Length: 294
Image (cartoon, rainbow, N blue to C red):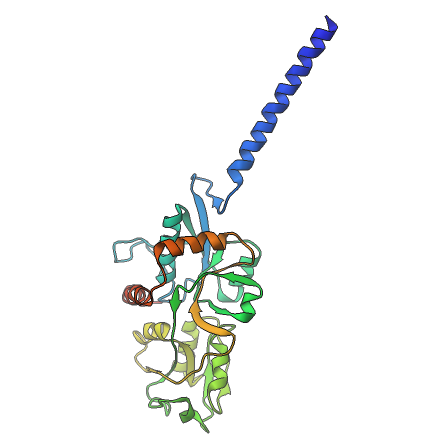
C-alpha cells in the first residue's frame, strides 16, 4: 500500500515537471527569432534610429499627415512623427518582413552608440560606408547614392567658383557636419581654413548664411532642400574626389554580427531596391513633401 502511494506521488511529481518544462519551452520559442515583439501585438518589431532632423532623408512633423496618401510614423516616446526618404524605405522593409516599424529620434553624435548598446536594431540617417566603420559595424547594400557639393552665400566672392583650384589663396572657412564622411573633403579645398563643424546640416547652412563659415560641404539632395528656404545661398558643383576607403553610398548600419542585417538585406533584395533611378524618384518626391521648417 505504501509503495503504491509512493508510485502515485512520484507520478504526480513527474507530470508536474513535464508541465513546467513544456511551459518553459513554449516561452522560449515565443521569444526566439529576429526582431523583438511589441507588447500590444503579435508582430515582431523593427527598431530603427533616425536623426529626424536631416531633410529630405528624415524629418520631424507634428501630425501623421504627409500629403502623398501615406502616414508618417509616430516617434517612440514622443508626440511627434517622422517621415522622409529613409523612414519611407524603412516602412517598406518592415512591411515586406511583416514587422511593425518603431522609430527612434536620436542625435547624430550618439546615434551609433545607441546601436552598439542594443537600444535599436539599425541606423538610417545618411550614414555612408567606410573601411574604418566596417571594422565595427555591418552594412546593408546601398539604398541611396549621393553627390558631394559646396554651398556658399550667393553674394560672396566664392559664388561663381566652378572648381576647387579657384579657392587657392582665398582662405575660405570650410564647415560640414561633425563626424561624417563629409569631413575628409574639407582637406581638398586649397588654402581652406578649417572652421567649426556642427551637429546638424541645418546648423551648417546657418553658419554660412550668418558668415561664420564661407562654405559648407554636404550632399546635393540636402543642399537642394536647404536652398528651397534659404534664398541667399548658392550650390557649387565642384571637382571633389572620393577619399580612399570611403564612399558616398548610404547604407543601413547594424551591430557587427547581428543576424538582423541579413533579415533586412533579404527584404531590400525582395523589394529590388538597387536601382539609382528608383532612388532618385523617391528622393525627388521627398524633397517636394518635406515641411519648410526642416
